[in-house]
Amino acid sequence: MAKYRWILLLPYLLLLVEMQVSPAMAASAGCPLNISGSNFTRAAIICSDTESRASCCRYINALIAVSIAQYANTTNNLGVSPELSNICLQTISQTLETYGMAKNATAFCGFGTKIPVNYECLGITSVDQMQQSPKFSNVTLNCRTPLDEGRCKKCLNAGILFLRNLVGAADNTTLSTCRDATFVAVASQVEDVAAVEIADCFFGVQGLSSTPGPSRNIFSPESSPSPFVASGPSQLSLTGPEVRRHSYHLSLVPAVGIAVTALATMMLVLMVFLIRKKSKELEGHDIKTDKTSMEAISQPTKKFQEVYAGPSSMFTKFSYRETKKATDNFSTIIGQGGFGTVYKAQLNDGSMVAVKRMDKVSEQAVEEFCREIELLARLHHRHLVALKGFCIEKHERFLMYEYMANGSLKDHLHTPGVPRLSWQTRIQIAIDVANALEYLHFYCDPPLCHRDIKSSNILLDENFLGKVADFGLAYASKDGAICFEPVNTEIRGTPG
Image 1 (tube, helix red, strand yellow):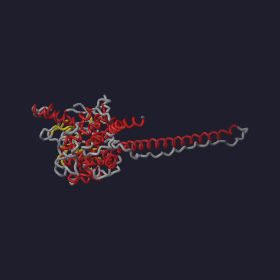
Image 2 (cartoon, helix red, strand yellow):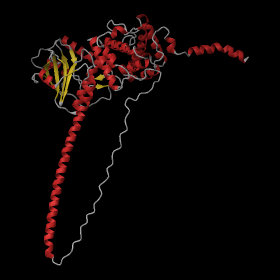
Image 3 (cartoon, helix red, strand yellow):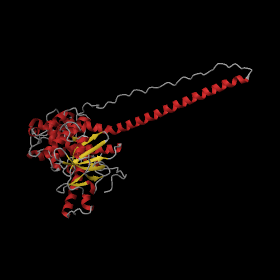
């Protein structure tokens, strides 16, 4: 009877086993994307934190981009066909919900709009077409694995330069889609492990694959040698010969006088020697301090030049002589701020630029100088003032921006004699600034807080197009969240 009972229970056991089949494998039957190797468990953990929504969306976008790169490796297509897009989006959403992700996560991240499964970029639909685009070979060259911190920055710079020439002044959705298409065109030509490593660099995430790989220790600290211990000087025993006493006290007077004179002379020589030695030590300490401070000041700029001043950089490095010639010996001043003075300049090709000169070379000023260049190297938006080049030479620091013919918004609001702006123009400038802030807060990776928005930092071009400038005080979110806490309550910047 027991055997017959097991035979009767066999269909129910088979049904129970069928219900335990992996949701990713069962759901992906109608979608050509292979998502079985994706780490959905980590995605669910990241998206469970409501304060890390930006990291959640970036991680999901990276998962989908890796699967599309694997799909493009065999089909040469930058995504699935329009007929299968809804099926794939529904499959991925159901898989994420199966692993415990909230339903509103996919809605917040914008499935189908901000995170599509087809990366058609300005009419480019295949990997071959993307690879034939101008300067794409530079992206392939700089994004070869392995990618450490320095090589990753060069890879991102090459990608930004390529997108800048390909997309131009496009909207944020087009820019994001073309960025994903660039990744797929690069990652589809390598193995899956290398594709995941490139995705870690492109999207700033880790742990995309559910298969653990060997850990890399890029920076292995070397053990520092133990300091030398100096032994103390030995003590000398100063003993003199015994003095014979004479019965005549007058014979001792000359000897005492000579001894006192000799002792005074020795004390005087010793004092002069010690004074000179102390003076040399103080001078050497001052020189060493100056060298140390200059090394501390030049260290971030040297590190900056290694990454951003290479042959693949989008910025042009100018010499001090070229800068002085372009500004006509710094004759035309068009602005003044806490950072320094802004001059009007004309380059050798006839283009006009605005040259910002750092007044004082201090550690804080150099830090803001390097921070602004590093941020502008990652930012690309039609409502942000573009950086054209820089100059680092001895104690001088310069930044070259695109020239804004109509100056700042402050000039048109508060300067007497300047024609007043119409209400339509003012509203359009406000919309331009809002678009720039939306880009900084929601589409940058990581999100940025400008912290110095004022009328003097809103510049207008010849068509009164508003652009945000001066990123010296910008603050980047550490965890990728849009919330920028803790807020620094110190007074920063200049009135405006």
